[in-house]
Image 1 (cartoon, rainbow, N blue to C red):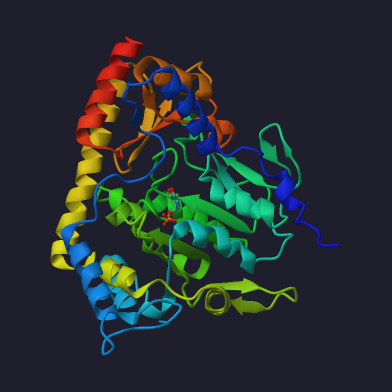
Image 2 (image 1 turned 135 degrees about the horizontal axis):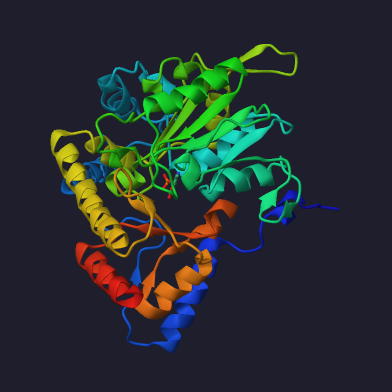
Length: 408
Ligand code: PLP
């Protein structure tokens, strides 16, 4: 008898964004003609920049000619892209990450979800609350949790991120083996300084633990003091893997490209307590299960690092950050507490005594604006909503005018 993986039964039946879509559809049906403004799902709205399109076209043109056509490429990514990443994203910041420590992929969702495959089922996993759901759900699928009760899975060590701790996870009281961190954070938009990250690096070193650091929103950091990569923290190369994405950095959500940094000096332990190279394990996993990102997409990603590419993507990030400023200012003027939006496209708004779905419904019904209810990211999000800066300036301005009117 073919039997199912029963761990899937433990997953929460509904998915946050499909629940939102259902409510939005219902509202639209009852209010035909109303223009709904979506500041919910964190998807970019602006077109790929001209330099990227040029690189993309070049890649396509090469595929159209026998002399330059490419079939299967290296699973880890073409060296032309890995070298640019190493140079511009890491070595330029004084971190000595090499091209062969970079694994190009079709995005950070797959990598953050797949990476847990390398670890034993009975390790202790620490996950922030609220959290980007892929970290948690993939550990549920892998059988690392018990049942879901009162908003939490048994077996996971949750790290509450609240106003009281500045939305920064604190060291867990019990010893953990795997720690998920994400800065700038989705959903809260909070950031961590080098000193704050050092606490985690030191913890991981002392406890033979590993940090999975998601830096998908790194390009939104404007504060010069904040680290753009965890490898700016001394010793992090021994205990941290970093996930990056071109999705938000350069508008690749539909084009698909990201990468994961697995330093060669990063070691984990087998059941005998012997050191095992994480780099070798991920290389084996990646080359066995993945056949590389398409050549034109890698050419498009390479173009992000050209002089024009850099200018153009920075302008695009500035555009979204300007939207974030408008949102922050509106929220502040209405007297709500918030975090994020300074070095992040997300603003995490405290609804005070309101439940996050009630706040969501209020904004939808009174302002025709869609946000994301914080409860969908974890129990600690129950009184928050996430507002995203990914939309046009005009739509963000209109949405904020409507919210001001609705909540005054
Ligand atoms: N990590 C975080 C924290 C995200 O918010 C997202 C997307 O929203 C991803 C990863 C996924 O990125 P990608 O589009 O590269 O799969």
